[in-house]
Image (tube, rainbow, N blue to C red; front, side, top):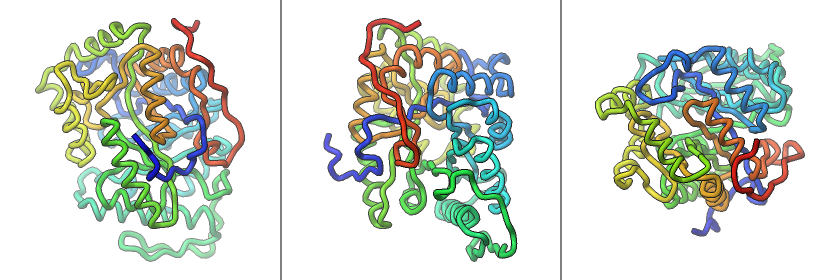
Length: 387
């Protein structure tokens, strides 16, 4: 599949940003649909996952956001930041929850604590108790981003929008540690309004797993829209992973994960989320409907997790060679950022780091985009696990 028509910001990079996922939103478990209190979203469990990923060499970690369950993202990021060594933190912000100038100050503060290792995931879903249509939600996000950028890059904010009217011309707010425009913005969304917002303002377009053909179509559409603004973006994939020494063991682990998920229970879990009826979630459902009897929609891409998750519903499943080959296929397409996860998160974080991570040349996204030097070398894939 050619990517000649896809303009990628870090097109010459030979590696990728490999990230893990911090389960702030009560999504951790040994078996989906059978919640074990040991995996509750609390400081002890979630900080352990994040610090494990830092120790094992992951370059970034997504700290998600949810109103219904779990912990506050920015409070958690601020508390864990001084404990980290190398990893970046990808903090999700729900646009509209916090008054934009105050949000900008909070982000700048955490960026200083991390000494520039902060990235931001822009979320545009409805707030609890509110119902805005797609165009309005993304317009609100656009205004939040534009106000953040004014506050980060100017000595004043003077903004007149549909949702926010802000004039702060005599303040001296803290600027981000990253003085070259502030933290990078990651963004996911599929509607025309979402694509336009990302193309205009964001740095990394995040996708959920789909067939390679569908991903290529999404990337081409985003690339064309970014070009209309004279810009290029990078592409990222948020996907689960189950890797074992053999393919049979990996598939068996996938089956065990779903032991307690019956159709009605899975539906109840999926419909809890505020974004359960979004277009992106419907695309995950469509992918699941195209899969075979074992839940595979294409080699090593398993859709079973979507039976019990409203968002990211696919997993790369296989032995180390198969998982690495799938990742390399995505990289050849132009995907430069990966956010992996598995259940339980700490255990799967270690397994992926043991079997696959040493064989990928890794960078942080600021490095890939030329903001910082460095990267780690790729090593040939050896048989069996590393101790």
